Length: 280
Ligand code: ATR
Image (cartoon, rainbow, N blue to C red; front, top):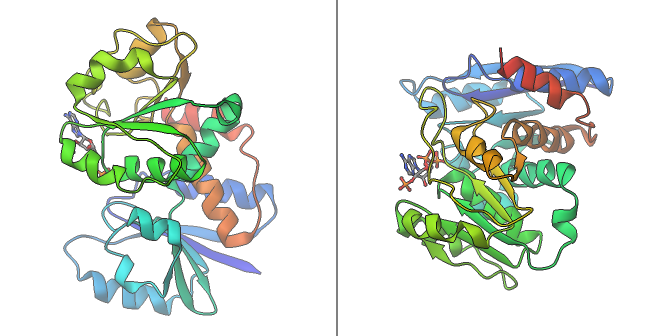
């Protein structure tokens, strides 16, 4: 079988997904192609989707700004993606478009790969900073993985409260302002920065100042440009264990590729290779 895969979004000319998926195909000897299908926001999305349906793709990724806009065009939505309210992966099966969201699980896989102990400990206290789409996916993955304490802090507290509604029976969630969270960082075993704050060119900014952390805490940032954000630099200065954002990109792609082909490709050296690409 020859897989016809791709990515829709805008702008996507610098997307690293083609590099990642072509590398996966080479590693497990899957034949196929993965191409960028840029859809400008100035065009009629419905018309573009109708044209895409004619292309007989086997699957595709969806990125900004279409992760929610794609929903009405799907034949089925995976329950997890339905809860999250956004889709980043479509698998085409018998002509039907089935939507999934691999962002949150991809994040969790990347974390567990580096820090396997996190999943084995009882009562890991987690703080998510920011309450956009990425936070929603990550929160959902943590709740489903059985984490018992997952708090959310955001500039606009209502958005954090809305995400906390996704909570399953076994998870307790407290919601904070960023000011409150700044005073509480010492409580947490894992702090995850899920907003775009600190991304190039605003590399000097950080969502909250990190003044104190618990001994042995992991601090993570989903921003990967730069690889080491100002937030991670502060965490490093305080002696935290660090978790870098580019690994989420690799593992969400690993999970998408698995949905399309049934093959889980080991990330191995790709972590280091992607870091080198991003560092220019
Ligand atoms: P999405 O991930 O859905 O695309 P986004 O617009 O990138 O969302 O926003 C992600 C998060 O970054 C939001 O929680 C946003 O805070 P608000 O809910 O208050 O808008 C947060 N965010 C963006 N810029 C910020 C800043 N300068 N300071 C603090 N939080 C910020």
